[in-house]
Amino acid sequence: MPNGNKKHRTLLVSITLGVAIILRLYPTLFHGAPWGTDGWPLLKDTQELLSNTPTMLAGNSATFADQYNVYWPGSIVFGAVSSLIFNLLPIEIMPIVIPIVAALSTLILFVIVEKLTGSTIAAFIGSLIFTTSSFDAIFTASVTKETFAYPLFMVGILLLAFSIKQFSFRNLGLFFVVSLALVMAHYALALILATITGSVLIAQLVVSFSRSSRASFDFRLLIMPISILAVIGSYLVYAFPGFEIPVNLSDILSLSSFVILSIAVSLYFTLSKEIPIRLPALILAVALAFLTLSTLVPIVPFQPVIPPSIVFDAIPYLFVGLLALFGYELSHRLLSKDQFSFLAVWIAIPLGLFGFSVFGTPDGLGFIYRLFTFIYAPAAVFAGVSLASFVEKNETAKLATLTNFSTLKKSAVVLVILIIAILCSYQTYAAVAQGQNLLGGQWGYTPSDISSAAFTKSSTIQNMSVSGDSKILYLYDQYYGVNVSVAKGYQILLQGTTNESNTPLVTDEIMLLDGYNIQLYGNPLPLNWSNNLFQHSSLIYTNGNDEIWY
Image 1 (cartoon, rainbow, N blue to C red):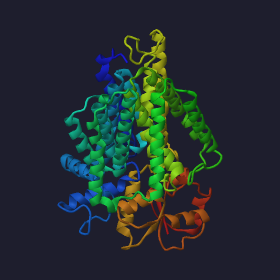
Image 2: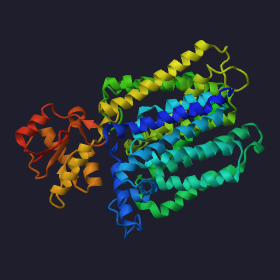
Image 3: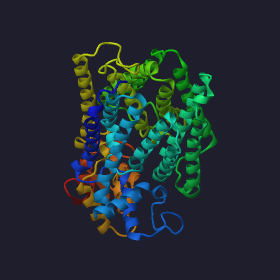
Protein backbone atom coordinates (compact mmCIF):
# COMPACT_ATOMS: atom_id res chain seq x y z
CA MET A 1 0.00 0.00 0.00
CA PRO A 2 1.45 3.41 -0.86
CA ASN A 3 2.80 5.31 2.07
CA GLY A 4 2.32 8.91 1.10
CA ASN A 5 1.17 9.79 4.59
CA LYS A 6 4.49 9.06 6.33
CA LYS A 7 4.97 12.77 6.95
CA HIS A 8 1.90 12.60 9.23
CA ARG A 9 3.06 9.38 10.91
CA THR A 10 4.01 11.00 14.21
CA LEU A 11 0.63 12.72 14.46
CA LEU A 12 -1.28 9.53 13.66
CA VAL A 13 0.73 7.50 16.17
CA SER A 14 0.17 10.18 18.82
CA ILE A 15 -3.58 10.15 18.24
CA THR A 16 -3.94 6.39 18.61
CA LEU A 17 -1.64 6.22 21.63
CA GLY A 18 -3.35 9.18 23.28
CA VAL A 19 -6.80 7.66 22.80
CA ALA A 20 -5.54 4.32 24.16
CA ILE A 21 -4.14 5.90 27.32
CA ILE A 22 -7.24 8.04 27.97
CA LEU A 23 -9.68 5.13 27.59
CA ARG A 24 -7.64 2.88 29.87
CA LEU A 25 -7.15 5.47 32.61
CA TYR A 26 -10.74 6.69 32.45
CA PRO A 27 -12.32 3.98 34.68
CA THR A 28 -9.85 4.46 37.55
CA LEU A 29 -9.86 8.25 37.30
CA PHE A 30 -13.67 8.39 37.14
CA HIS A 31 -14.21 6.24 40.23
CA GLY A 32 -11.14 7.36 42.17
CA ALA A 33 -10.26 3.74 42.99
CA PRO A 34 -8.58 0.79 41.23
CA TRP A 35 -10.78 -0.63 38.47
CA GLY A 36 -11.56 -4.31 38.21
CA THR A 37 -11.74 -7.29 40.52
CA ASP A 38 -8.66 -9.24 39.44
CA GLY A 39 -6.28 -6.47 40.43
CA TRP A 40 -6.68 -6.76 44.20
CA PRO A 41 -4.55 -9.91 44.65
CA LEU A 42 -1.73 -8.32 42.63
CA LEU A 43 -1.93 -5.08 44.60
CA LYS A 44 -1.71 -7.07 47.83
CA ASP A 45 1.20 -9.19 46.55
CA THR A 46 3.12 -6.07 45.50
CA GLN A 47 2.59 -4.54 48.91
CA GLU A 48 3.81 -7.76 50.55
CA LEU A 49 6.87 -7.86 48.28
CA LEU A 50 7.85 -4.33 49.27
CA SER A 51 7.34 -5.11 52.96
CA ASN A 52 9.29 -8.40 52.94
CA THR A 53 12.07 -7.89 50.41
CA PRO A 54 14.24 -9.91 50.08
CA THR A 55 11.99 -12.95 50.07
CA MET A 56 11.05 -15.98 48.04
CA LEU A 57 7.99 -15.36 45.91
CA ALA A 58 6.73 -18.92 46.18
CA GLY A 59 7.48 -22.27 47.72
CA ASN A 60 7.44 -23.67 51.24
CA SER A 61 9.15 -20.66 52.79
CA ALA A 62 7.08 -18.06 50.97
CA THR A 63 5.55 -15.23 52.95
CA PHE A 64 2.66 -14.80 50.52
CA ALA A 65 -0.82 -16.15 51.15
CA ASP A 66 -1.42 -15.95 47.38
CA GLN A 67 0.21 -19.06 45.93
CA TYR A 68 -0.99 -18.51 42.37
CA ASN A 69 -0.11 -15.02 41.14
CA VAL A 70 3.32 -15.03 42.77
CA TYR A 71 4.48 -17.72 40.34
CA TRP A 72 3.90 -15.20 37.52
CA PRO A 73 5.50 -12.13 39.12
CA GLY A 74 6.05 -9.86 36.11
CA SER A 75 3.35 -7.33 37.01
CA ILE A 76 4.12 -7.62 40.74
CA VAL A 77 7.81 -6.82 40.32
CA PHE A 78 7.03 -4.03 37.86
CA GLY A 79 4.51 -2.58 40.33
CA ALA A 80 7.03 -2.73 43.16
CA VAL A 81 9.67 -0.94 41.10
CA SER A 82 7.11 1.72 40.05
CA SER A 83 6.11 2.19 43.68
CA LEU A 84 9.72 2.81 44.67
CA ILE A 85 10.43 5.15 41.74
CA PHE A 86 7.36 7.35 42.29
CA ASN A 87 7.36 6.96 46.08
CA LEU A 88 3.69 5.96 46.08
CA LEU A 89 1.83 2.96 47.48
CA PRO A 90 1.08 0.14 45.01
CA ILE A 91 -2.65 0.87 45.32
CA GLU A 92 -1.94 4.44 44.18
CA ILE A 93 0.55 3.92 41.35
CA MET A 94 -0.22 0.53 39.80
CA PRO A 95 -3.76 1.43 38.60
CA ILE A 96 -2.09 4.23 36.62
CA VAL A 97 1.15 2.82 35.24
CA ILE A 98 -0.06 -0.66 34.26
CA PRO A 99 -2.94 0.60 32.05
CA ILE A 100 -0.45 2.99 30.44
CA VAL A 101 1.80 0.01 29.73
CA ALA A 102 -1.21 -1.80 28.25
CA ALA A 103 -1.86 1.17 25.96
CA LEU A 104 1.53 0.55 24.34
CA SER A 105 -0.07 -2.45 22.62
CA THR A 106 -1.73 0.04 20.29
CA LEU A 107 1.64 1.53 19.35
CA ILE A 108 3.09 -1.92 18.69
CA LEU A 109 0.07 -2.92 16.59
CA PHE A 110 0.59 0.24 14.52
CA VAL A 111 4.16 -0.83 13.74
CA ILE A 112 3.12 -4.42 12.95
CA VAL A 113 0.46 -3.33 10.44
CA GLU A 114 2.79 -0.82 8.82
CA LYS A 115 5.46 -3.52 8.52
CA LEU A 116 3.13 -6.09 6.95
CA THR A 117 1.13 -3.82 4.62
CA GLY A 118 3.46 -0.89 4.02
CA SER A 119 0.59 1.50 4.77
CA THR A 120 0.62 4.12 7.52
CA ILE A 121 -3.07 4.78 6.91
CA ALA A 122 -4.01 1.11 7.35
CA ALA A 123 -1.87 1.04 10.51
CA PHE A 124 -3.64 4.12 11.89
CA ILE A 125 -7.15 2.87 11.12
CA GLY A 126 -6.51 -0.66 12.40
CA SER A 127 -4.87 0.47 15.64
CA LEU A 128 -7.58 3.08 16.29
CA ILE A 129 -10.37 0.55 15.74
CA PHE A 130 -8.60 -1.86 18.07
CA THR A 131 -7.84 0.60 20.85
CA THR A 132 -11.40 1.98 21.07
CA SER A 133 -12.95 -1.47 21.53
CA SER A 134 -14.72 -1.33 24.87
CA PHE A 135 -13.97 -4.91 25.92
CA ASP A 136 -10.22 -4.34 25.56
CA ALA A 137 -10.27 -0.84 27.06
CA ILE A 138 -12.30 -2.02 30.07
CA PHE A 139 -10.26 -5.16 30.61
CA THR A 140 -6.85 -3.49 30.29
CA ALA A 141 -7.89 -0.64 32.59
CA SER A 142 -7.44 -3.09 35.47
CA VAL A 143 -4.29 -4.22 37.22
CA THR A 144 -4.14 -7.77 35.86
CA LYS A 145 -1.45 -10.11 34.61
CA GLU A 146 -2.99 -10.00 31.13
CA THR A 147 -2.95 -6.20 31.11
CA PHE A 148 0.78 -6.17 31.78
CA ALA A 149 1.57 -9.14 29.54
CA TYR A 150 -0.32 -8.17 26.38
CA PRO A 151 2.23 -5.56 25.18
CA LEU A 152 4.94 -8.23 25.56
CA PHE A 153 2.78 -10.57 23.48
CA MET A 154 2.47 -7.91 20.79
CA VAL A 155 6.25 -7.35 20.82
CA GLY A 156 6.62 -11.08 20.19
CA ILE A 157 4.28 -10.82 17.17
CA LEU A 158 6.28 -7.82 15.92
CA LEU A 159 9.60 -9.66 16.21
CA LEU A 160 8.08 -12.62 14.37
CA ALA A 161 6.98 -10.31 11.54
CA PHE A 162 10.45 -8.74 11.31
CA SER A 163 12.18 -12.14 11.41
CA ILE A 164 10.07 -13.59 8.60
CA LYS A 165 10.97 -10.68 6.39
CA GLN A 166 14.67 -10.94 7.26
CA PHE A 167 16.01 -13.37 9.85
CA SER A 168 18.63 -12.08 12.28
CA PHE A 169 20.10 -13.49 15.47
CA ARG A 170 19.50 -10.11 17.06
CA ASN A 171 15.75 -10.53 16.61
CA LEU A 172 16.03 -14.12 17.80
CA GLY A 173 17.78 -12.97 20.97
CA LEU A 174 15.13 -10.32 21.56
CA PHE A 175 12.40 -12.90 20.99
CA PHE A 176 13.99 -15.15 23.60
CA VAL A 177 14.11 -12.30 26.15
CA VAL A 178 10.50 -11.32 25.39
CA SER A 179 9.42 -14.96 25.74
CA LEU A 180 11.05 -15.19 29.16
CA ALA A 181 9.45 -11.93 30.31
CA LEU A 182 6.08 -13.02 28.91
CA VAL A 183 5.99 -16.40 30.65
CA MET A 184 6.90 -14.66 33.93
CA ALA A 185 4.02 -12.26 33.35
CA HIS A 186 1.35 -14.74 32.21
CA TYR A 187 1.75 -18.33 31.07
CA ALA A 188 -1.44 -18.39 28.95
CA LEU A 189 -0.25 -15.53 26.74
CA ALA A 190 3.12 -17.22 26.37
CA LEU A 191 1.37 -20.40 25.21
CA ILE A 192 -0.76 -18.45 22.74
CA LEU A 193 2.33 -16.71 21.35
CA ALA A 194 4.08 -20.07 21.01
CA THR A 195 1.06 -21.49 19.17
CA ILE A 196 0.82 -18.53 16.78
CA THR A 197 4.59 -18.55 16.16
CA GLY A 198 4.68 -22.25 15.33
CA SER A 199 1.52 -22.02 13.22
CA VAL A 200 2.72 -19.02 11.23
CA LEU A 201 6.02 -20.73 10.43
CA ILE A 202 4.29 -23.95 9.40
CA ALA A 203 2.13 -21.90 7.03
CA GLN A 204 5.19 -20.06 5.71
CA LEU A 205 6.94 -23.38 5.10
CA VAL A 206 3.96 -24.83 3.20
CA VAL A 207 3.68 -21.64 1.12
CA SER A 208 7.37 -21.84 0.23
CA PHE A 209 6.98 -25.48 -0.87
CA SER A 210 3.97 -24.50 -2.97
CA ARG A 211 6.33 -22.25 -4.93
CA SER A 212 8.66 -25.25 -5.42
CA SER A 213 11.40 -23.22 -3.79
CA ARG A 214 12.67 -24.42 -0.45
CA ALA A 215 15.29 -21.69 -0.47
CA SER A 216 12.57 -19.09 0.10
CA PHE A 217 12.05 -20.39 3.65
CA ASP A 218 14.79 -19.77 6.22
CA PHE A 219 14.82 -22.86 8.43
CA ARG A 220 16.58 -20.89 11.16
CA LEU A 221 13.16 -19.40 11.88
CA LEU A 222 12.17 -22.70 13.48
CA ILE A 223 14.46 -21.78 16.36
CA MET A 224 11.81 -19.24 17.46
CA PRO A 225 8.98 -21.65 18.40
CA ILE A 226 11.53 -24.08 19.80
CA SER A 227 13.04 -21.36 21.99
CA ILE A 228 9.73 -20.12 23.40
CA LEU A 229 8.57 -23.68 24.12
CA ALA A 230 11.90 -24.33 25.86
CA VAL A 231 11.45 -21.18 27.94
CA ILE A 232 7.90 -22.15 28.90
CA GLY A 233 8.85 -25.73 29.73
CA SER A 234 11.87 -24.70 31.79
CA TYR A 235 9.93 -22.09 33.73
CA LEU A 236 7.08 -24.51 34.44
CA VAL A 237 9.53 -26.77 36.27
CA TYR A 238 9.55 -24.03 38.90
CA ALA A 239 6.05 -22.59 38.49
CA PHE A 240 3.91 -25.68 37.85
CA PRO A 241 2.11 -25.31 41.26
CA GLY A 242 0.76 -22.02 39.88
CA PHE A 243 -0.33 -23.53 36.56
CA GLU A 244 -4.13 -23.53 36.82
CA ILE A 245 -5.15 -24.67 33.33
CA PRO A 246 -6.66 -28.17 33.66
CA VAL A 247 -4.61 -30.53 31.50
CA ASN A 248 -5.78 -33.95 30.33
CA LEU A 249 -5.29 -36.02 27.19
CA SER A 250 -8.80 -35.34 25.90
CA ASP A 251 -8.35 -31.56 26.08
CA ILE A 252 -4.89 -31.76 24.47
CA LEU A 253 -6.25 -33.76 21.53
CA SER A 254 -9.27 -31.48 21.17
CA LEU A 255 -7.14 -28.34 21.31
CA SER A 256 -4.66 -29.78 18.81
CA SER A 257 -7.47 -30.54 16.37
CA PHE A 258 -8.78 -26.96 16.55
CA VAL A 259 -5.26 -25.56 16.00
CA ILE A 260 -4.61 -27.90 13.04
CA LEU A 261 -7.99 -26.96 11.56
CA SER A 262 -7.14 -23.25 11.95
CA ILE A 263 -3.82 -23.70 10.13
CA ALA A 264 -5.48 -25.77 7.38
CA VAL A 265 -8.20 -23.17 6.78
CA SER A 266 -5.60 -20.39 6.67
CA LEU A 267 -3.52 -22.31 4.13
CA TYR A 268 -6.60 -23.10 2.05
CA PHE A 269 -7.41 -19.40 1.74
CA THR A 270 -3.75 -18.46 1.23
CA LEU A 271 -3.18 -20.91 -1.62
CA SER A 272 -6.56 -20.39 -3.27
CA LYS A 273 -6.63 -18.28 -6.43
CA GLU A 274 -9.50 -16.32 -4.96
CA ILE A 275 -11.34 -16.34 -1.66
CA PRO A 276 -15.01 -17.42 -1.75
CA ILE A 277 -16.24 -14.43 0.23
CA ARG A 278 -19.56 -16.16 0.81
CA LEU A 279 -17.98 -18.61 3.28
CA PRO A 280 -16.55 -15.97 5.67
CA ALA A 281 -19.76 -13.98 5.23
CA LEU A 282 -21.73 -17.06 6.24
CA ILE A 283 -19.60 -17.32 9.40
CA LEU A 284 -20.40 -13.69 10.24
CA ALA A 285 -24.10 -14.32 9.62
CA VAL A 286 -24.00 -17.35 11.93
CA ALA A 287 -22.34 -15.21 14.62
CA LEU A 288 -25.13 -12.64 14.29
CA ALA A 289 -27.74 -15.40 14.49
CA PHE A 290 -26.14 -16.82 17.64
CA LEU A 291 -26.01 -13.36 19.20
CA THR A 292 -29.68 -12.77 18.41
CA LEU A 293 -30.64 -16.21 19.72
CA SER A 294 -28.74 -15.45 22.94
CA THR A 295 -31.37 -12.83 23.76
CA LEU A 296 -33.89 -15.66 24.07
CA VAL A 297 -31.97 -18.63 25.51
CA PRO A 298 -28.40 -19.28 26.76
CA ILE A 299 -26.17 -20.69 24.01
CA VAL A 300 -23.22 -21.84 26.11
CA PRO A 301 -23.10 -23.04 29.76
CA PHE A 302 -23.29 -20.32 32.43
CA GLN A 303 -24.12 -17.67 29.82
CA PRO A 304 -26.92 -15.30 30.84
CA VAL A 305 -29.79 -14.41 28.55
CA ILE A 306 -28.43 -11.34 26.80
CA PRO A 307 -30.61 -8.22 26.83
CA PRO A 308 -31.48 -6.81 23.39
CA SER A 309 -29.44 -3.68 24.16
CA ILE A 310 -26.27 -5.79 23.96
CA VAL A 311 -27.16 -6.75 20.39
CA PHE A 312 -27.35 -3.04 19.59
CA ASP A 313 -23.99 -2.51 21.32
CA ALA A 314 -22.53 -5.26 19.12
CA ILE A 315 -23.45 -3.50 15.87
CA PRO A 316 -20.16 -1.58 15.45
CA TYR A 317 -18.19 -4.80 16.07
CA LEU A 318 -20.25 -6.69 13.52
CA PHE A 319 -19.62 -3.86 11.07
CA VAL A 320 -15.88 -4.12 11.79
CA GLY A 321 -16.24 -7.84 11.12
CA LEU A 322 -17.84 -7.05 7.76
CA LEU A 323 -15.03 -4.65 6.90
CA ALA A 324 -12.54 -7.29 7.99
CA LEU A 325 -14.07 -9.76 5.50
CA PHE A 326 -13.52 -7.27 2.67
CA GLY A 327 -10.03 -6.54 3.97
CA TYR A 328 -9.29 -10.27 4.15
CA GLU A 329 -10.23 -10.74 0.50
CA LEU A 330 -8.39 -7.58 -0.56
CA SER A 331 -5.25 -8.60 1.33
CA HIS A 332 -5.36 -12.00 -0.38
CA ARG A 333 -5.41 -10.35 -3.80
CA LEU A 334 -2.77 -7.69 -3.31
CA LEU A 335 -0.39 -8.83 -0.58
CA SER A 336 2.27 -11.44 -1.08
CA LYS A 337 1.39 -14.96 0.03
CA ASP A 338 3.90 -14.72 2.88
CA GLN A 339 2.33 -11.52 4.20
CA PHE A 340 -1.21 -12.78 3.81
CA SER A 341 -0.52 -16.16 5.44
CA PHE A 342 0.94 -14.34 8.45
CA LEU A 343 -2.25 -12.30 8.91
CA ALA A 344 -4.51 -15.26 8.11
CA VAL A 345 -2.90 -17.49 10.73
CA TRP A 346 -2.79 -14.64 13.27
CA ILE A 347 -6.58 -14.37 13.22
CA ALA A 348 -7.26 -18.08 12.69
CA ILE A 349 -5.48 -19.33 15.83
CA PRO A 350 -7.46 -17.16 18.31
CA LEU A 351 -10.65 -18.14 16.46
CA GLY A 352 -9.66 -21.78 16.83
CA LEU A 353 -8.96 -21.29 20.55
CA PHE A 354 -12.36 -19.62 20.86
CA GLY A 355 -14.00 -22.61 19.18
CA PHE A 356 -12.17 -24.94 21.55
CA SER A 357 -13.29 -22.88 24.59
CA VAL A 358 -16.94 -23.04 23.48
CA PHE A 359 -17.21 -26.53 22.01
CA GLY A 360 -14.07 -28.45 22.97
CA THR A 361 -13.93 -28.30 26.76
CA PRO A 362 -16.33 -27.83 29.70
CA ASP A 363 -13.74 -25.57 31.38
CA GLY A 364 -13.63 -22.92 28.65
CA LEU A 365 -15.88 -20.29 30.23
CA GLY A 366 -13.00 -18.39 31.81
CA PHE A 367 -11.16 -18.14 28.48
CA ILE A 368 -13.99 -17.03 26.19
CA TYR A 369 -14.18 -13.33 27.03
CA ARG A 370 -10.38 -13.09 27.28
CA LEU A 371 -10.00 -14.25 23.66
CA PHE A 372 -11.99 -11.34 22.22
CA THR A 373 -8.90 -9.10 22.35
CA PHE A 374 -6.75 -11.69 20.53
CA ILE A 375 -9.37 -12.06 17.78
CA TYR A 376 -10.15 -8.37 17.45
CA ALA A 377 -6.56 -7.16 16.93
CA PRO A 378 -6.01 -8.96 13.58
CA ALA A 379 -9.66 -8.33 12.64
CA ALA A 380 -9.01 -4.60 13.12
CA VAL A 381 -5.96 -4.95 10.87
CA PHE A 382 -8.07 -6.37 8.05
CA ALA A 383 -10.71 -3.68 8.63
CA GLY A 384 -7.97 -1.06 8.45
CA VAL A 385 -6.74 -2.51 5.15
CA SER A 386 -10.28 -2.38 3.77
CA LEU A 387 -10.88 1.25 4.69
CA ALA A 388 -7.38 2.41 3.76
CA SER A 389 -7.89 1.07 0.25
CA PHE A 390 -10.52 3.76 -0.33
CA VAL A 391 -8.29 6.71 0.51
CA GLU A 392 -4.93 5.83 -1.02
CA LYS A 393 -4.05 6.30 -4.65
CA ASN A 394 -3.16 3.31 -6.76
CA GLU A 395 0.44 4.41 -7.25
CA THR A 396 2.00 0.96 -6.78
CA ALA A 397 1.01 -2.65 -7.15
CA LYS A 398 0.42 -2.94 -3.44
CA LEU A 399 -2.88 -2.75 -1.60
CA ALA A 400 -5.01 0.03 -3.05
CA THR A 401 -8.46 0.61 -4.44
CA LEU A 402 -8.86 0.28 -8.16
CA THR A 403 -11.04 3.38 -8.34
CA ASN A 404 -10.02 7.00 -8.44
CA PHE A 405 -9.05 8.83 -5.33
CA SER A 406 -11.56 11.47 -4.23
CA THR A 407 -12.21 13.80 -1.35
CA LEU A 408 -15.70 12.36 -1.01
CA LYS A 409 -14.33 8.89 -0.39
CA LYS A 410 -11.82 10.24 2.05
CA SER A 411 -14.53 12.05 3.99
CA ALA A 412 -16.76 8.98 4.02
CA VAL A 413 -13.96 6.82 5.42
CA VAL A 414 -13.19 9.37 8.13
CA LEU A 415 -16.89 9.41 9.05
CA VAL A 416 -17.02 5.61 9.26
CA ILE A 417 -13.93 5.51 11.46
CA LEU A 418 -15.35 8.18 13.77
CA ILE A 419 -18.70 6.37 14.06
CA ILE A 420 -16.99 3.08 14.97
CA ALA A 421 -14.64 4.74 17.44
CA ILE A 422 -17.38 6.83 19.10
CA LEU A 423 -19.87 3.97 19.43
CA CYS A 424 -17.25 1.61 20.87
CA SER A 425 -15.89 4.29 23.20
CA TYR A 426 -19.41 5.07 24.39
CA GLN A 427 -19.68 1.50 25.62
CA THR A 428 -16.70 2.17 27.88
CA TYR A 429 -18.58 5.20 29.21
CA ALA A 430 -21.73 3.11 29.68
CA ALA A 431 -19.81 0.50 31.65
CA VAL A 432 -17.92 2.97 33.84
CA ALA A 433 -20.31 5.86 34.38
CA GLN A 434 -23.61 3.98 34.10
CA GLY A 435 -22.43 0.67 35.58
CA GLN A 436 -24.02 -1.44 32.83
CA ASN A 437 -23.93 -5.16 33.52
CA LEU A 438 -22.30 -7.46 30.91
CA LEU A 439 -20.24 -4.51 29.63
CA GLY A 440 -18.04 -4.56 32.73
CA GLY A 441 -19.93 -2.10 34.92
CA GLN A 442 -20.04 -4.65 37.72
CA TRP A 443 -16.24 -4.34 38.05
CA GLY A 444 -16.21 -0.74 39.27
CA TYR A 445 -14.94 0.12 42.77
CA THR A 446 -15.19 3.42 44.62
CA PRO A 447 -13.28 4.89 47.60
CA SER A 448 -16.33 4.05 49.73
CA ASP A 449 -15.85 0.35 48.88
CA ILE A 450 -12.30 0.57 50.18
CA SER A 451 -13.35 2.42 53.35
CA SER A 452 -16.05 -0.17 54.12
CA ALA A 453 -13.52 -2.98 53.67
CA ALA A 454 -11.04 -1.22 55.95
CA PHE A 455 -13.78 -0.72 58.54
CA THR A 456 -14.74 -4.40 58.35
CA LYS A 457 -11.11 -5.47 58.67
CA SER A 458 -10.65 -3.37 61.80
CA SER A 459 -14.00 -4.28 63.38
CA THR A 460 -14.45 -8.01 62.81
CA ILE A 461 -13.23 -10.70 65.16
CA GLN A 462 -10.19 -12.61 63.88
CA ASN A 463 -11.11 -15.32 61.33
CA MET A 464 -14.71 -14.04 61.23
CA SER A 465 -16.20 -14.03 57.74
CA VAL A 466 -18.73 -11.85 55.94
CA SER A 467 -21.16 -12.54 53.10
CA GLY A 468 -21.08 -10.70 49.79
CA ASP A 469 -20.79 -11.09 46.04
CA SER A 470 -17.58 -11.76 44.10
CA LYS A 471 -16.84 -8.04 43.80
CA ILE A 472 -16.84 -7.88 47.61
CA LEU A 473 -14.86 -11.12 47.74
CA TYR A 474 -11.92 -9.80 45.74
CA LEU A 475 -11.55 -6.59 47.74
CA TYR A 476 -12.31 -7.92 51.22
CA ASP A 477 -10.65 -11.32 50.95
CA GLN A 478 -7.85 -10.91 48.40
CA TYR A 479 -6.67 -7.50 49.66
CA TYR A 480 -7.75 -7.16 53.30
CA GLY A 481 -7.79 -10.84 54.24
CA VAL A 482 -11.43 -10.92 55.41
CA ASN A 483 -13.11 -14.24 54.52
CA VAL A 484 -16.16 -13.82 52.27
CA SER A 485 -18.94 -16.31 51.50
CA VAL A 486 -20.51 -15.57 48.11
CA ALA A 487 -23.10 -18.38 48.34
CA LYS A 488 -24.49 -17.31 51.74
CA GLY A 489 -25.02 -13.74 50.63
CA TYR A 490 -26.86 -14.79 47.49
CA GLN A 491 -29.09 -17.15 49.45
CA ILE A 492 -30.07 -14.44 51.93
CA LEU A 493 -30.91 -11.89 49.22
CA LEU A 494 -32.63 -14.38 46.93
CA GLN A 495 -34.86 -15.93 49.61
CA GLY A 496 -35.49 -12.69 51.51
CA THR A 497 -34.97 -14.43 54.84
CA THR A 498 -33.31 -13.40 58.08
CA ASN A 499 -29.53 -13.61 58.14
CA GLU A 500 -29.06 -16.60 60.45
CA SER A 501 -25.48 -17.35 59.46
CA ASN A 502 -23.95 -15.04 62.11
CA THR A 503 -21.87 -13.39 59.39
CA PRO A 504 -22.38 -9.75 58.39
CA LEU A 505 -23.80 -9.24 54.88
CA VAL A 506 -22.21 -6.57 52.68
CA THR A 507 -24.19 -4.91 49.88
CA ASP A 508 -23.53 -1.90 47.66
CA GLU A 509 -25.38 0.40 45.30
CA ILE A 510 -24.30 -1.41 42.13
CA MET A 511 -26.39 -4.40 43.21
CA LEU A 512 -29.51 -2.30 42.67
CA LEU A 513 -28.53 -1.95 39.02
CA ASP A 514 -26.60 -5.10 38.10
CA GLY A 515 -27.71 -7.66 40.68
CA TYR A 516 -25.50 -10.06 42.61
CA ASN A 517 -22.14 -10.76 40.96
CA ILE A 518 -21.48 -14.47 41.47
CA GLN A 519 -18.71 -14.90 38.92
CA LEU A 520 -18.50 -12.94 35.66
CA TYR A 521 -21.65 -10.81 35.70
CA GLY A 522 -24.49 -9.66 37.94
CA ASN A 523 -27.32 -12.11 38.51
CA PRO A 524 -30.88 -10.78 38.98
CA LEU A 525 -32.20 -10.28 42.51
CA PRO A 526 -35.81 -9.96 43.73
CA LEU A 527 -37.18 -6.46 43.24
CA ASN A 528 -37.83 -6.09 46.96
CA TRP A 529 -34.50 -7.43 48.22
CA SER A 530 -33.51 -4.11 49.78
CA ASN A 531 -36.82 -3.81 51.68
CA ASN A 532 -36.45 -7.39 52.90
CA LEU A 533 -33.10 -6.51 54.42
CA PHE A 534 -34.63 -3.62 56.38
CA GLN A 535 -37.36 -5.95 57.67
CA HIS A 536 -35.19 -8.91 58.63
CA SER A 537 -31.72 -7.49 59.38
CA SER A 538 -30.06 -4.62 61.25
CA LEU A 539 -28.03 -2.00 59.40
CA ILE A 540 -24.76 -1.68 61.34
CA TYR A 541 -22.71 0.36 58.82
CA THR A 542 -23.32 2.60 55.84
CA ASN A 543 -21.27 5.17 53.97
CA GLY A 544 -23.88 6.05 51.35
CA ASN A 545 -22.71 3.37 48.92
CA ASP A 546 -21.84 0.29 50.97
CA GLU A 547 -24.04 -1.19 53.67
CA ILE A 548 -23.28 -3.90 56.21
CA TRP A 549 -26.20 -5.87 57.66
CA TYR A 550 -26.34 -8.20 60.65
